[in-house]
Length: 72
Image 1 (cartoon, rainbow, N blue to C red):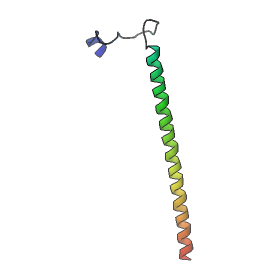
Image 2 (cartoon, one colour):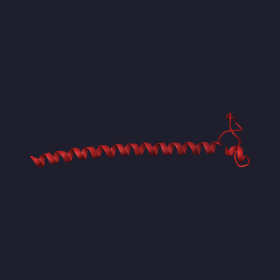
Image 3 (cartoon, rainbow, N blue to C red):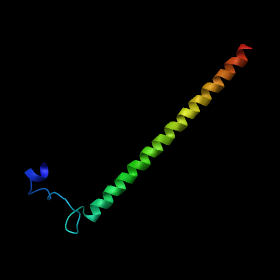
Image 4 (tube, rainbow, N blue to C red):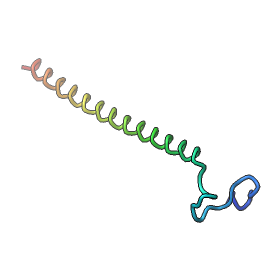
C-alpha cells in the first residue's frame, strides 16, 4: 500500500524482475548476509540448548546414583 500512496518516496511495484527493477545488488548482499547471520545464530542456540539439556539429564542421573549409594 505504501508504494501506491507515497510513490515519490518508494519505488514502483515490481511485477517482473528485470535489469531496471528489483533489489540493488548491494542491498541484496546485505539481505543475504543478515539472513545467513541469523541462521547461524539460531542454529548455534539450538545446539547450545540441546547441550544444556543433555548435561542436565546426565547430572540428574548421577544425582540419583549418588542418592542410591547413600541410601544403601
